[in-house]
Length: 547
Image 1: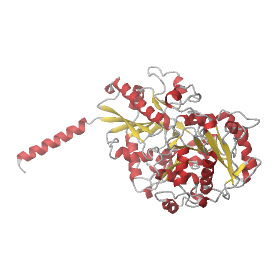
Image 2: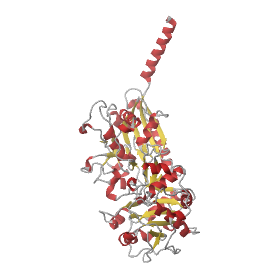
Image 3: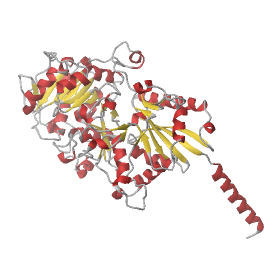
Image 4: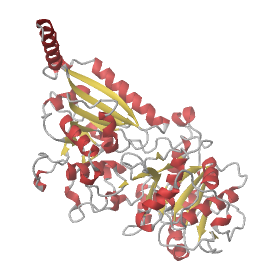
């Protein structure tokens, strides 16, 4: 090799060393932003602007020794980014946001607020970026719950999981290790369930089960990685009113933005005037799914609670009962998986609604669901009923698989715009009569390009199945299941209702005591591969997460 070539190679090597030395270490702030609703997207960009403005007003060199940079990235949710585990490959993929020099990742949601960026960075300076750790406001279960797959059922109160909306801080070494685990062979990963229900708890459990402090050695349980509770990350705005720490400013640097209980509930609201369509209970058709054995036990509770605000309600059953009255679907009742019955209900509901111009929405409801009609109305006020709108509490099934999909779980209630109901009746059907109705509905709508838009405040389980801090973030809209609870107390305390001596009279409707069998309703097959559902066994009751 000539001396000239040696000199060139030496120069390139020297430049490479210099570049490696001057490449700054990073703090990455990611805002996980849902595509819908529009208000959530606006909050994402407002948060981004606020953090950038705070960044402009401080000098990182005053906080961190050496060369540091702060990056702010709004990560738009595409298909299943609502779970952080599914977003990780994209952080390290084409975007290359999560690099070798990223020391801290501050994970935010649209309703996270950064009260003091300076104070937050000063807290990070005091922590070890080389440790496999994550920090947040710790939540705990009061009892074993199905929404967390009955995790730690013998002692559910010991396991902490982060309040995602308050913000979570990860070390770069942990997220890089986690990304490697997620990208590895799925046979080597411990997954508690194929269902994604609570992204926060499932994240904490996945880290506990799959990330070892020493990947080359067996890890005793005592050495597993669990969430570290951070006093500078607070659950609600009320926490910001706590006394300041001397010489350090506000105690809370990150917190969740709660929705005020009265926000959006009146027609005079500025938000409603500017961006929303005023909606009341009279604009909503409540299709309540029941069966003969629960007519006396459950319908009585509905009639004493939320029925007073729901004049346009219908009880669809396996038999006609003139004393309630109920409308027969012509579909025999089964233990779980009510796809044929639900499709018949949608068909009959459209016929019942007819040309009533006041009806804009249909809500599918179980007979053991409690809800607040005024809060449902406020929620719908910020969506366009002329569009294809699919709202509820979003779950995911096999999100890491090619055939994975999102759906709204039925017990919390499913909200559909009337144009979407017509599309469902025209294009969707059941692979089997006993297939899980909510899952089949979600799968079909995903194939049709209709997004499952999550609605805060809708709950598939009982109040005691959720951390109290989460219930304080926004007024609850619905709860599900009456067992081991007092539904009337739940209605009064959590849903802002008062018990009625008499419910509102049912609106006049056509006599529909019987219905044709489902195959005579003229429904078209669900597009794009119902066979995948059959192969996965979703049509069987064993795959239905019936809470």
